[in-house]
Image (tube, rainbow, N blue to C red; front, side):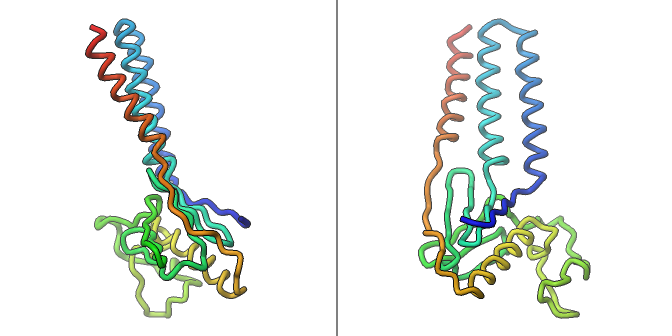
Length: 197
């Protein structure tokens, strides 16, 4: 796999950082307010929150290669070779259609209805949109879906132009370990709180 480019919204990392700081304050404050049961419960709850932050904010990303793309969603990792791509879309999120399945990238969602609907002419420069033509807000390079689909289209076109034969094998794999660990932390926190008093 060559020419790696990782796409993950910066806002996810900002929110993750805020969540980590708040979780650490939560654990820190428990050491001043309660006994051992309270401290253990707080640590387990913070562990659950940190695992959820990892699952939903840090883990989701789209990794582009010259041979294909790897989409890391909260509980699944999908590898798609460019040779297997039938269609790219960004209406709701970066969506890739293959012969076997259609998958959307959690990290590259389209803007909501409150997002500014106007697209400035400077945004479409070099994007094969004719003067006076239109573009969906989801395709704007300032949106997560637009930035990701643009990268995907460039890589796909480059792959097709060189007649690429070294495409990645298309696979889907479940990634359940973080979710299981989060569930264990939550159940342990509830059990510690219930039986520790």
